[in-house]
Image (cartoon, rainbow, N blue to C red; front, side, top):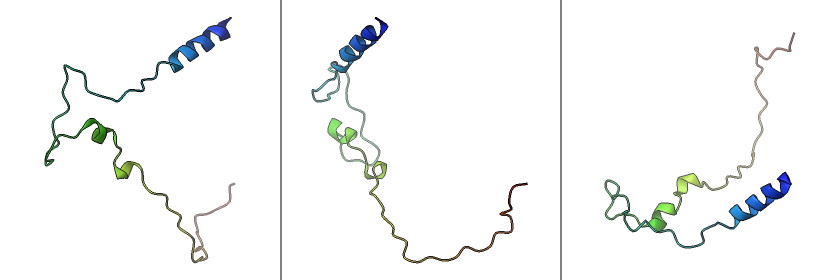
Amino acid sequence: MKRLVVLALGLTLAGCGNRAELKPAATASLPVAPEGAKATPSPGDLLKPPVQTRPARSDDLIESTNERRSDKYDLPPR
């Protein structure tokens, strides 16, 4: 019985997704323009992640290998 209630609650919450475009409330306004910006950003601009949050993948290939120097502190456990 408890599983049925949890399943019903989960399905109910899954159907609550908003598929409309995000807009500020009628009584609210957009945030002020950042210092140095020429205009206030639109909601779409505010939702678009900056490049730094989504860095490109880096596939650095190892082109040369060097032997490691000996480490006098790399001791076996006692």
